[in-house]
Image (tube, rainbow over all chains, first blue to last red):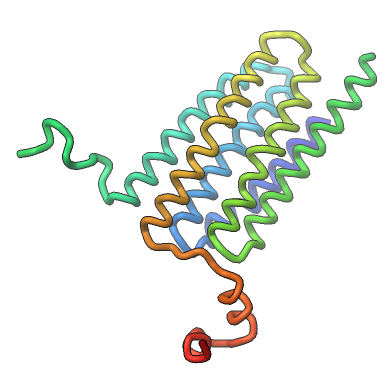
Length: 93
Length: 119
């Protein structure tokens, strides 16, 4: 049963990867990357159950945290063109 | 009892994987960025929810269930935040949503110049 779930998740990952390659705008690609991160978390958890090693759940938690930080950082870069926002204290010179 | 739990967990896992595949198909087939965001949110709600519920039923009352609940809370809080930031960034960059009359005129008229001259 975990094999079926893992196969379905792999099919979904392939389809989202096609969207990430086709995507006409950069936001499509960022959205596809975010969805790939969520699917990878679920796939890690399912593989942990499939092989009987629940330590994979810790990897899934870390992957999810990094995924959020990465998505917000990429979005900020494409919105402002820079990762540091001007106007804060210590940036004026 | 354990057979009932097994059957419930089976149903949850399979329907979660099916929801993930449906969401990915929607991301391929939808015509516009904002509608693709709608399709992608199915993975974060129904897909992740059913898959995690199936794994919780399989694990029972252990530390594994606590970790699965933590993963579920992480997806529950961060995925709408990321989607909102994404749509706000797209609107700020000037990406217009595809409206109904744009879609029908794009279907019936071949070139965008003809579509703008007809309106």
